[in-house]
Length: 161
Image (cartoon, helix red, strand yellow):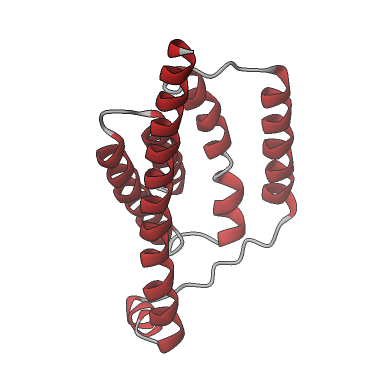
């Protein structure tokens, strides 16, 4: 479950990156990426009820492997030796965590989770983080449009001059 959630989160990040380079489907890709990211994180949260976080996070290093695959296939990025080497070191480190880490499971019940998500610190955090993320995303798209428009004007001026 956690591996699937990690890969889905990584796919969401790819969709968000695609939204930054897409001209026609920018907003749709960005919103889809945000929604898919949330779904992947929900799977990860559910998985935390079945195993210790130290174990799951180490297994979640599959996300870095999927990042290489998505980067090459979806984003058409080159696969460099340094990408493979750095990902290998991350996976190796996480394998060591799997072998020698603390894997006791501290179960969180639905009642405890319900209580935690209604606490004031969590509500303040959520009311700040998500609107801020939407604001930053909108600001980035606006700046991107302005830069694109400015470049078009500069190109047309160069062609005239």
